[in-house]
Length: 214
Image (cartoon, rainbow, N blue to C red; front, side, top):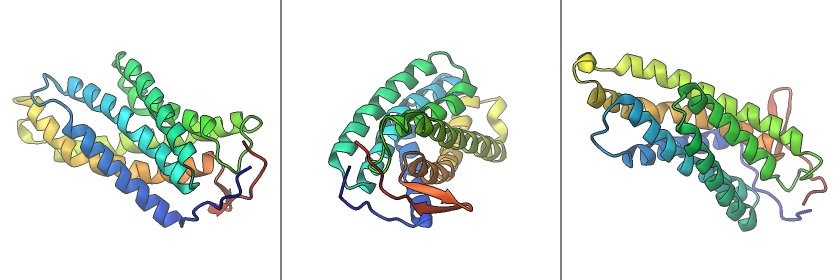
């Protein structure tokens, strides 16, 4: 059981941190997508693969930072990289519903189950954390998918039918940071709850009491 007090962050600050991380990770991932991709579908696969390797480790490091634990942060980076590898394999299926919703659910479930907080019993609470993590990840994916599609539809240029890929990429640059930023804000609130750092009473997040944990 850890005796180091965790950082106590207000829900608004946690949400804001998630927004910043989402916007930054999306922008970095989009920046590393090769120019001149042949189709919007190829662009999305390359973008998703890069997001998988960037976003998961960053969230894990943030969870370690909340607990003032370099060990948890380092372990989280390894778990995040492993999740990125799994996601890369998932992207090979080109099933975009699984990529946009299934992976975030997998991300949340694995992060919450493997990166137990110092206020959660690692093995006895494993399945509970996994279920809560699945919910957190599902919210991440659903909010991202819905927001992204709404914004892309509204900012897509009229020449899309004649010159689809460049117009689509420009639309994604405008829509993606907003969509992932918003989704990530909600995810940060929920993943903190999923790993056991907070609990919910009457829809208000509160700091959870320490329990015996690894």
